[in-house]
Image (cartoon, rainbow, N blue to C red; front, side, top):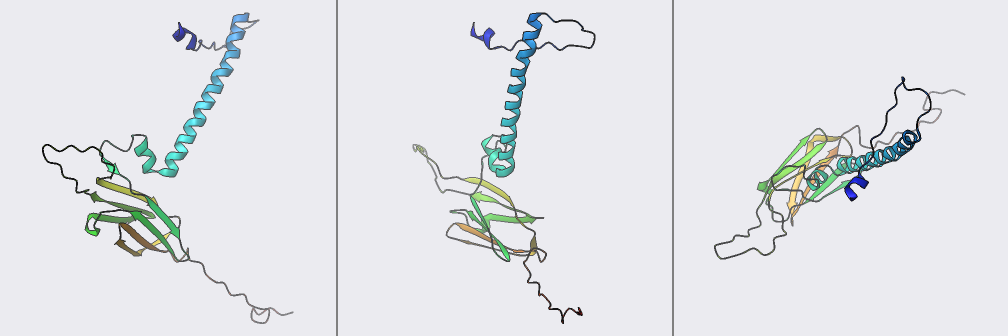
Length: 189
């Protein structure tokens, strides 16, 4: 039977009370435990990779794992560009009107949400054979790479692309520092 062969043997755990030589079978069981440790380490490594992907991809990873929720929420694609004094965030939202989009900024987390209707209406006697365009509620939260000024945010929609411009916080903007010469700095020689 294959199921008996695939089952791991029980691992013997020695106590302080056990002394003397162990029988050969006990020794073999202990050497097999190193294989169990290797399997546990491999499982831990795979779990760490999965957790890393979840952290990097956020909501998209949770959605792929089926942990985002049972509701049909689609996640728009995004590009984030860091300019000298601004952060530019562009979301793909084809067919979504500006009135259907809600944008919030909480700390450095930018979130968009809304609803998209594909316009596909079926009546009795019609059957949808293929439907790839996302529809329904959408939401996407993206962390800003640097601190931004919440009072200096603008947004516009054109050709299905939501463009959000966020000014960097004054502490994040590059400043030119002048260098004083010896006579200007008050240093005497």
